[in-house]
Length: 79
Image (cartoon, rainbow, N blue to C red; front, side, top):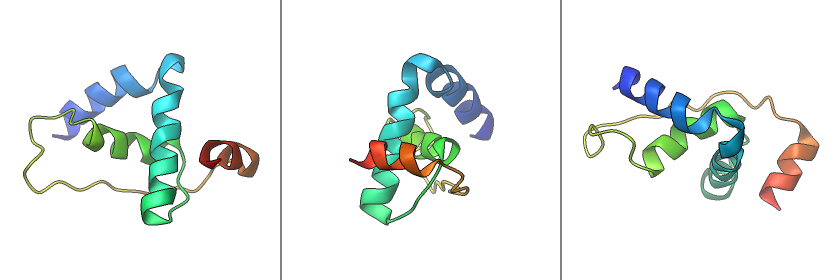
């Protein structure tokens, strides 16, 4: 599962054209879970939300770590 997510998320969420997906994940983490997270943690959430693996539907976890995000950027994302 790790390898599949790593490859999927690298292709879909690490390009400049998909920064909005990271922003969507950051906003989701804050609105639904009251967590301040950076783009890396948002990537795992969006991989699950967008069902990028055939392993979903089984026991799946997302490790959410890191709050290293600029406060101005965070404010823009959640507004």
